[in-house]
Length: 126
Image 1 (cartoon, rainbow, N blue to C red):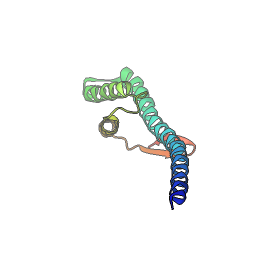
Image 2: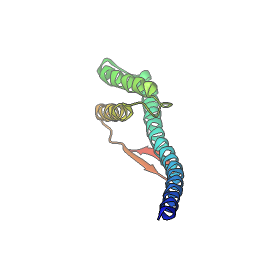
Image 3: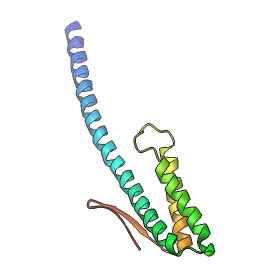
Image 4: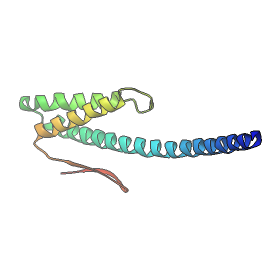
């Protein structure tokens, strides 16, 4: 039956187009949410680093030089992070490096922060 094949093809194409449209909408929403979480996390690290740079700058001794080097390295990594390029192929690798540098800095400063992401936003607590 040639007519039934045309009808079947039309139904399949309609379903495909509707699914593609819904997939784009859901994908965009997921991407915005995930991007916001990453931005919030990096923003917390940046605020933490700037606060500690101010604290250490006035009180830094030669003993604190390693902390300052790691701190400046973290700030540099954050400033070079590609916020506006979601297609950057090493985005997750760079994010992992920032997280590692943050943990290293916390260890040197002898603090144990707890990074939390919630509906209200992200925050660091110690």
